[in-house]
Length: 113
Length: 113
Image 1: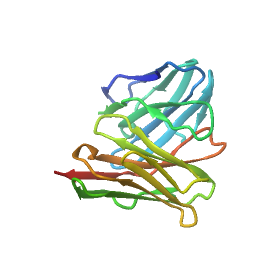
Image 2: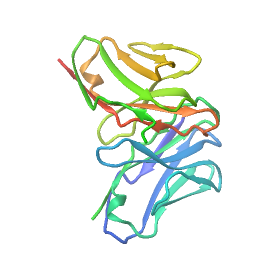
Image 3: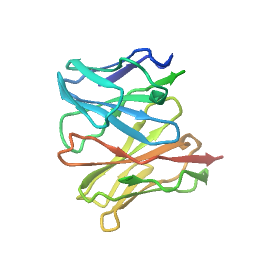
């Protein structure tokens, strides 16, 4: 069966520090991968998605970047965090076809202080 | 501009009764709709989906209804159980969007014993 791992679960970082969140998927190959963010009191917003190694699409211009160095690995990064980057970050995967649900990891609660 | 709207931020229901969660959308290109359930500090869990060629899909206690002319869908939970208490997100996608889901802001369901 497929599983998705996301870490760390919580993170407190000072403004201006770098960020690296990692997500890996097991039990499937060539998945679509996604990074979403849920800010306080808001819905889930798509940040990045990837349909293959090295292929990244950005949905919202921001202070963050994503990379996919391996088929089942997706990384969310920032060189310098802002206070507004605080939120709940979720990684998800889906099979590469239409009308397939996304399956989410347990998320990372990021607090920028 | 919100393409997927959940106008009720919260709903309280007695155990054993029906819970009805509503969702409206504006984009006529959406052809796949999903409901997710989310507990605090966890990622959303996929519950049930429906494609635009159907108007009803049932899975156990959960039924999703789609009214394309009204651009409205609803999730019925019968009978409601205390363990159903969570935030429910409605989501939608369009063919060719690489599975990118657009989420509503969620409705918090409380099922009272």
